[in-house]
Every structure is written in C-alpha cells, then in structure tokens.
Image (cartoon, rainbow, N blue to C red; front, top):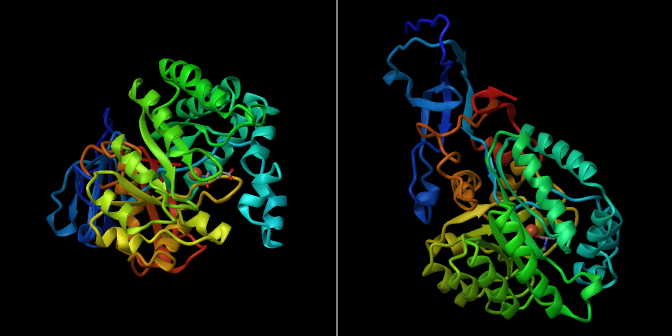
Length: 421
Ligand code: NIG
Ligand code: FE
C-alpha cells in the first residue's frame, strides 16, 4: 500500500504497520469484570497511527487507508500493548531491607520482624535520616528502570515518614517525580502505615496528627490524590481507618486501602462505605467480603509479588473474577514485602499463581490498573486520544509468551507519549 511521507509539518505522525497482535483495543467507561476480562479485545495484523504523542487511529491492516505520515515503522512479528499501569507502589524509600530478607529465610515472620523494630519502622528510621534530594535521586533512578520494564503510569504512596515533616518530604519527592516524568503519577497519603515509635503509648495522638494536621495541610497543598490506611491487626483498626477516611473525605481524598493482607475482620465492608476506588492485598478473603465487593464498584487489587516474597497465601482472584468483581494487579514495590517493581513478572505470577488467563492478567495490569488509579482517560488501552504509551515487544509467537517466560521480559522498546524512551 502506498504511504506518502509528509514534508515538514507541525504535527508528527508515526505509523506502525504489520503489528502481529495489538492488545487491549477500545475505550472503556468502566473497568472490565467477569468474562469481559477473559475476552480481552485485540486485533491481529494491525496498524497503529500516533500523532503528537497520542493514539490517532488503529485497526486491521486490511482496513488501513493511506495517509501522509512522517515516519513508518514495520512491526512484523511484534506485539504492541499499552504500557503497564502499576496502581500500588511504595517507590519512594530510603534503603533496601536485605537483612530482613535473610531473617525471613531463616524462619522469622513478617510480624516478628516488625515487633523487633524492623519492618516498616526500620524504613521510617532510614527515611527520616535521608535528605529530600537523595530520596528523589534514588526514586528517579527506580522510575527510569521501571519505565524500561514497561510501566507507563504509576501510583506511589507515602508511609515511611510518619511525621508531618517526613510524610511531607515523601509527598514532595512524588511531586518532583510528577514534574520530571511525563506520565500519569498519582500520590497517595499513607501516613497510617504504622504507629511511629514516639507515639507508641499514644496511638490516638498519632491519629489526631494525621486527621488534624497532615490531611488538611497536604490536601490544601495538592500533595496527594488518594488516602490509604494499613488496616490490619497490629496496625490500624477499622474504627481508626474510618476516622482517617472521614477526614480524607472532607478534602475529597478518595480511599485506596490496604486490607486483608493477614486477616479478614470486616475492613472491606467498611472501606466500601467510603466508596474506596480500590481495596488492595486481599490475601485473606471470606465469603462475606466477596459478597460485599460484589455490591460495589470498587476494584480488587491483587499484589502477587508480596505473596511470593513473604510466602503468604495468594489473593483468591478466581473467586473474585467469577463473582464479577473487577480485578487489577500491581507490584506493591517496596523494600519490605515486595522488592520488585517489574510488572512483567507480576503478569506472569497472575497467570501462574493466581490462575488468571494471560488475557485476564493483561487486562488487570493495563486498563483495570488505570481505573484503580483514576487515569483510564489517559492510558490503559489502545484508544483514540489516549497517550501513546506503548510496549513494543521483540518478535514473539503470541502475547502468551509474556507471562509464559516468567522472569524474562520480551520488551524491545517502550514509547511514552509516542517517544522512544
Ligand atoms: O503493602 N502492608 C503494608 N505495607 C507494605 C509493606 C511495607 C513494608 O514492609 O515496608 C505492603 O506490603
Ligand atoms: Fe502496599
């Protein structure tokens, strides 16, 4: 077919031809659920046209009508899909916790490590001692690595500061990342991640600090988009979560909550009353939790990397999908329970450990992840007007190879806003 190359123009149009499989095509008003996840829309032998960093058109090669473009790229044998949307990370942190990793191998549990002053409080100590510029520099490098691994939208939590000064420091680092990287980044206030040492005998005092100082100050300064609580035995109770979510609601902070990681004790029903955008972890779920989720629009986010690393049960995703609940998957990238931000591995785990089909896993890691962080208008599917944030694979037999070759990734290059990064 004759394609003319345009001469100098203000717009830059790029045409990708002969794409073996173009995945997650279409625009979606809601996250996909039930059988719709399994029937992920895709086009065999496709073309894709981008203009000024956005998706301009796409379809079957045979339906392509020649237009003037600036560049033509032949993608014979390659799969193209939207970049991963990692809707749950703790990307900003001061140091690895490799010593705890070894403790865990030697049989000490996550809870025991936390009780000895390790765990989250260990990360807090290190983060408080680190300058904003060093924290930012480290986070920036991690972000660059994740982009190479195909992540094109990300949610990042605070939660290793646990004081007004240090939670602000974390949120400011996320704000700097938002400035530096032209991709959707969302900031979540997770001041309720643990009770800091100085409040051990005054936990209400710490909740007061979150409710009366942090939420109003950070919301007014536009430093956070969402509010999160680690609602778990030994961390924050349902009543404490409710107080914090109420305070967040007064500033329009939508909840995304850590729930049911180790215990199921009614937190889900409560979070749903607050219209949580997502409830995350859910390794421990009972029938009642599933019934509650079924009645809501809330997305269930599974974090298989955390189960893998901590050797704890996996989220019963099959039950969730069969109940028609939209499921997203994310890395939970953090130094304590999931020290990997590689979404390609998360997708493989979703298939191998969560028993999701490749189609369900890819939907959960793209469009449903985008919904779980409120950016589905910009990314998550191949749709006209969305950002051209795309993964271009090396030649592969089919998209099944993406989860099949666990621990590998088949990415040749990544485009953000149409630009090869
Ligand atoms: O999502 N569960 C709570 N928070 C993190 C772990 C944080 C840490 O151990 O540093 C998580 O798994
Ligand atoms: Fe987490």
